[in-house]
Length: 101
Image (cartoon, rainbow, N blue to C red; front, side):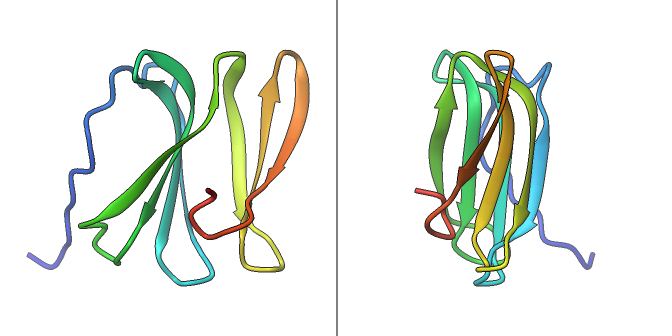
């Protein structure tokens, strides 16, 4: 088989969730997902440390009043940017590193 498979972690609830994959300026995967983790709904990020995502850094970006509608892209400086709904408002978040920490 010519594929790489990594099971990252178990999600408590992804029923209304969205998953988005982009490549950071370092060429490594950056994954955002909306779901329930640690008993909180929110947007969470996974920054892979290699192409197979065998090791990664996990981060909770936003909690609670954040809705499941979001999108992300690599911006002109090579770092992720994120737009999302929050309490009826469209908001923008600019990551200051590839791992968005």
